[in-house]
Image (tube, rainbow, N blue to C red; front, side, top):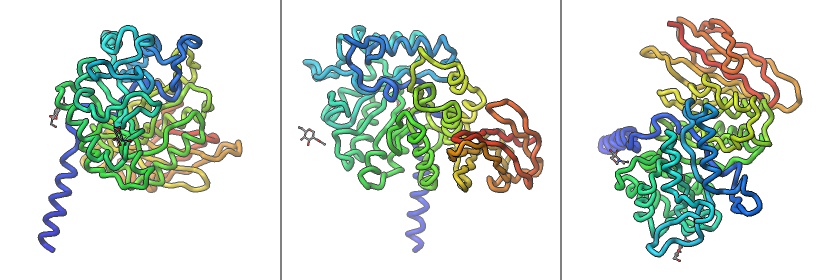
Length: 411
Ligand SMILES: *[C@@H]1O[C@H](CO)[C@@H](O)[C@H](O)[C@H]1NC(C)=O
Ligand SMILES: *[C@@H]1O[C@H](CO)[C@@H](O)[C@H](O)[C@H]1NC(C)=O
């Protein structure tokens, strides 16, 4: 028994001490990713404006800077599937579609770097990408080296056309090859998602040691149904999910779809707020050339971004769900030795059209600081007041909408 305890304690020490230590993603990554909005449109002959081409990524890079997103932290411009040629080159290296990426990926990376942005790559651990282009299986080392030569800063590695059982060995192996290049590259893994879908239990210790972020659940689609299913998945499975997150290693509930076709204004505010509570990567997939100013304002809400990027890196949790009203909270700075400040979100998932009055007891969230809290509504900017630990916060929440607050401990 004693021996058993020693082993358990040693394992605990190891698992808490060893996370991927490449110095990257100490707060959740932010930027722009092509997939949800632009998919696999390779038809540049008839749709040059929307097809997957270097000009699309250069334009989005330009707009991240000129429209003020980059200054707020959105600094990655990332490829997704369908940038590739159908074949590797004569030396076995990956190559982009030459007609759609005439500058080559080094050229695209140089363009983005000159603007102070980071360049994101997409590949797939299997024999093919999800859309059927060459995957990295059998070429792990050469592909990691190619990414470093091109100036890649961020790698999203998908898991189509692969055996999920092999991923426990394959994702770490590719991570070692990335590391061996000497070029710091954020490593985004789809590994646990493919395993969960196949009924496997992911090896979280290994995932945390290997990846800066990982997907847990379904791809996001352009609808509130999709966004709310993701929020509910993260709430329903939070005891398994939350402990894995922290600086350098994050759960990824998938892209922000704010500014597209599917979300109302209230629903867009709800996605932004919940992603901040979840300490989620903020990777927009939208058309920055055509952004409704109201939606842009949501994406550029500095107070909510600050919650998302809080340096403690503690993912929030759902404290209650009653009558389709969720109350979520997240511990944030500033702190005392024993007490935290909190971000709080009240989410109304009812669709009956009527705003709901919601009572949030501070005790529900474990807010016990005797000096009390000053709470501010992060969308209106209005300070609601001072709250003692035995008091309630009253808010009115629109249907499929949210109220997000931050409650700082009084100094
Ligand atoms: C990948 O391709 C190789 C070579 O054709 C094949 O042996 C292997 O079974 C494939 N792997 C998967 C997971 O499809
Ligand atoms: C490689 O791994 C070592 C050990 O974890 C780490 O200190 C180093 O920063 C990593 N380098 C890169 C380029 O990821």
